[in-house]
Length: 142
Image: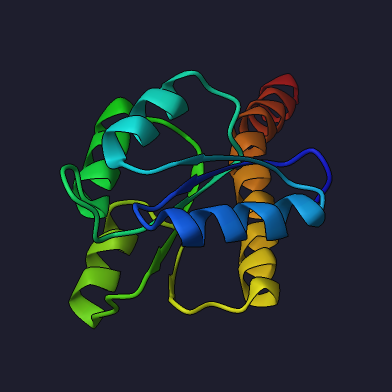
């Protein structure tokens, strides 16, 4: 989706660079960082629609990054992409607010499909408060 801002977080620089290029070729605006700490700082600047997050990284790993994002109440949608897939890790990531969980290697078409799904969910979540206000205002007026 043209103009969609994606934050790509993975300590594997070659993978990050190639994924960044593939996504940019599809019209995404991509920022790549290589650690959880960098992801938190970058997200704090705002404006990202989706973050693609690796779980196994030195320093602040993906689960710790998810916990920090939840604590800071950052509303960016999160896709977890990892080469270390395990059902318990997937469940923990989802419980911490990740939209979906993909394992490496991941086909670029599958990744972009999940990105679009996450964007739609984010737009839906952002519209809920105004929809709720509109509905409750309509009820109060009757």
